[in-house]
Length: 602
Image (cartoon, rainbow, N blue to C red):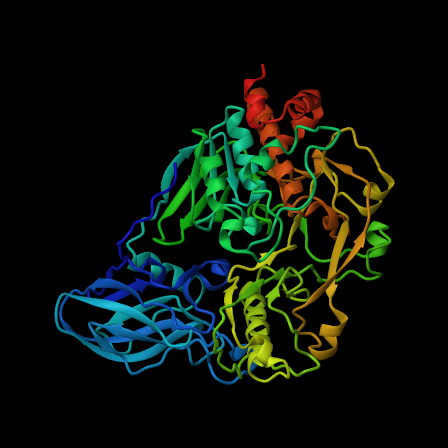
């Protein structure tokens, strides 16, 4: 079951009968604007982004019903997204058109932080008016919400609980979220790891809710991020692990390729074929209810219509990448690099720090055979012949934010990558000595959803380390075979030379390994009793993450914890109890696998 979108429904309610809130993400027609929810936990809401690669996007529009005709003060929650760098130009400009009248204010031109920019007043002649967002640049203008108020002095709350309470009242949200029922397993995160977890458990008879806060499945392997699947599958000691990953895999190699290369529909087809999987797209988990050290329920918000939904289950799986569910539940976790003294790892730094591997914003261009213009970008990073990159596409190594917090600063990191891509492209096309070679090239695609590699790592009964992998330490619960090298990323020295502290390019240092089976005890929380994990947020050190973080390996983790969840239900136990008392049965399931062919086996 897919949670339906409320097409054409505008979430507007009166406060004092003469104040209206219009959430931008709920516009009936979003035109060329896209929904960006990556910073929802930091800034309070999804927003619309004018991601036009320097070409103004089509207007977003909707119909607003007003309580009565009259004059209304207009305020728009927005920001000048380059202001954190004191950059000139305010590229994210847009205008508001109300009832056919274009307001004089140009929005997105002031303030580094999200705030309510004053748009003056507008006269509403009838009961309804068409409201449009009119992009002026195609350079990442952003609109969170619009307020119309008959009180010219009314300014809505802008942060925290007051703003959340304001939204709740304005949108007539109920005190209690909608009860979506009880499942055997709730999986949060619809990347490859989460999708495999949900399908694996469903094929073994569990009723599963799969909650994904984007409109597509696949995470970094989706059309939004465009990273191909890496790591080998179907390896000893359990060669059937990977059969399900194969069903999701197009088999095509290459990053930053056209959307069909990643085939979002293929993933939907696999999930849709499972009657036991209940899919909730565009749904963001943000709250947990605990019973002691166990998760009792989660509450999630639909990112387009703001409705809240409650899911209960005896078991939960954190496949978010960021360890969001575990964090909300109070799970033990680490973030950043451990010291060599703490872990004994030769690849660890001498002192612990907050550095993580970064987030990639990939891009590509095409040759059109005719002159293609691209504007200068004075607000972007500025390049010279020495610092520019003569490239027609940007791969995984366009990677930013290694010395930033990948969770709390996600919008800043992504925006910094935008400034690098646009600034470099403007230079090579307009000012470089080789600009003739780029004259017929058009910027075709730039990711607006950043592809993360690392943030929180949730701690299990085993924290896998470099020594375990390189020495071949064989745990009794060894299952998911990782084959990728210990691949750790660092700021590229040449990039640091020209942009110290503001790097956007990376290098990878590879340390070869022999295929190594990861223990099951790294795939459940050590202090949240009913939570499993799969993907890059499992229980490993920063160094060990370098090998297990690739998506085929994460998908096999999902296959395994789906099996473990079925045993939890069968034996009325928890994930640790599977290891303590039912390990041989888990091994039998792993030998059989959950691929399509396994269904015919008895």
